[in-house]
Length: 254
Image 1: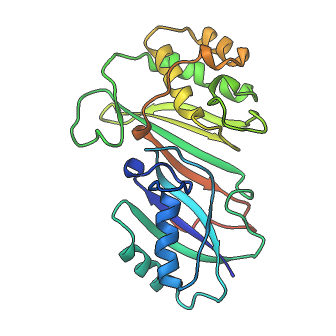
Image 2: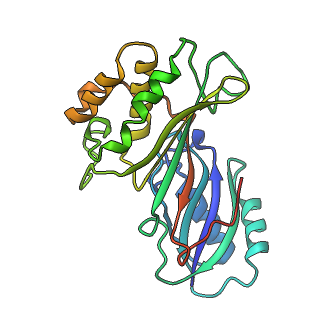
Image 3: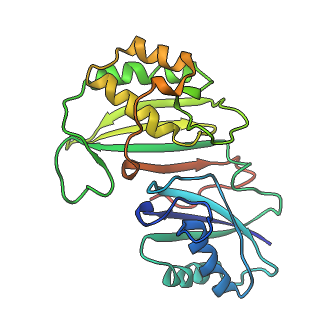
């Protein structure tokens, strides 16, 4: 029997999603709670990796178990009781045995939040950055991203990627009524550290270190040494994972 879980988590206390020996990870924590609850060894497959300290406001994972879960709603309630406060599961849905949380995902979305002032209440979930930024120039550069498919300039070295090809569908900065900036980017896949590296380089466009055309040249160069340092992890959230309707339909809107 295969089930999809919808969940969200604060990544501050974890070395990313993926299970690692002797390290706290979201996957390992969830698997431990599910194994206790369902009384059999449970292994999860996630929609993708998130790095150390990165958050997920929406995440999907699947697991297999030997028997049907009699009451998924009650099971989710008990699961949340077992889990620490920084991981919350919202749904458990029976899916087809061939449904795959990672390989069937067609689109993923990340959001990065930047606070332009010191705020003690958002320091764990935004990058507090006080230098004035030209958001129009940042959006001019960001709008170029869907024109490219090779993102080697933003790919972490030694990541064992089979390819650095990604298809970006959307990339844009917006600001809320308090002036907090949000960078939203959607693509079919992402490379390790890719979003944080893009954000760091776009910030350098906004503060005048690069022009939008120089940003274009950085992408075209396919050279990681030309891009800026990656933005801090705490401002980054995986915010959506989308599947074909016949595989899975999102149940939860946070």
